[in-house]
Length: 167
Image (cartoon, rainbow, N blue to C red; front, side):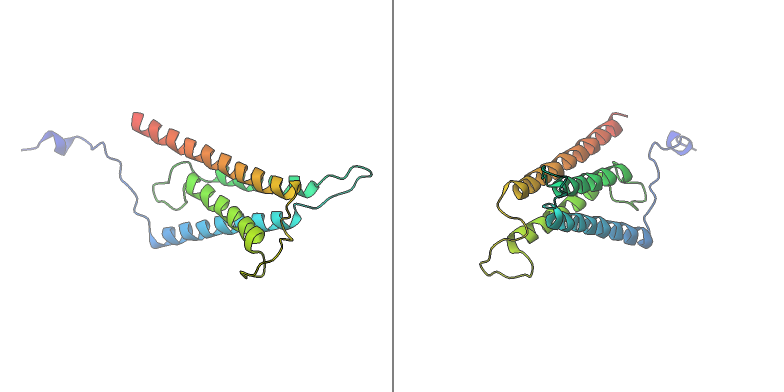
């Protein structure tokens, strides 16, 4: 004798099991996102004070370019990664990917502003991120941009999860 559960299809969707290669690809992409954040933060920390003089007006063009690099990185991560994890989980979702890139930027900037190269705990002056409006703008606006993009990724993930639950 057959029961209704034997003849009707299940509502559960099959889940693909990730392979070892999928795990390796995900880990490598996570490391790449973190390294990209480190690179953008390091380049921005060294070049945010660059000025391209055009006569009497001196404006720190490097500040705009450094913050533009951060925005480009975070926009690229936000557009390339899926909002929710894929069934095989070969790619990190948008929120963890954005977090890794932003964490790389923050760690690079903090390392270069507080400890400074080379690594030592000696009392020394800061020559990379000086205590002026240009460096403070780079730090504060960069942190605000990282927070804004992380918040956007979190809202998108929350919205997608709620839409999935609603059906």
